[in-house]
Image (cartoon, rainbow, N blue to C red; front, top):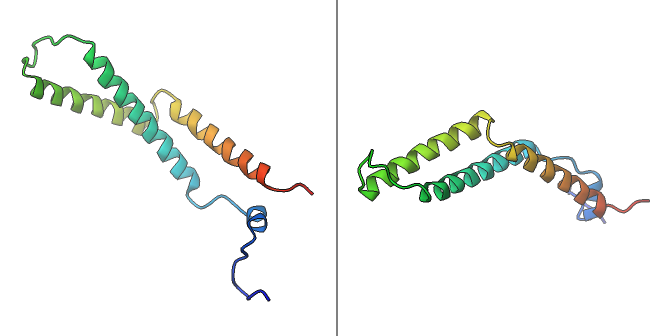
Length: 111
């Protein structure tokens, strides 16, 4: 006997009636932008290691590295928040959305 008003525990029935969760696109967008920002920040850090200090901010490693980190983070934050990053976030969002769609279609029986 199935109780009225309770959701079904059948995963196939749930998937067939499934719709995108509210806010899923926004969460996917945010995750993709965060990943792009993380990657940009890591690349900037790696690139900084290849540059010899110029002496402009002194050669005390701590103050220079702090300033460079803050500057790099500001550039990354600005690029990611404006949507003018490298375009990686848009590609990730499209790929993740397609993978989610394909995954759902593969799980559903065709009948």
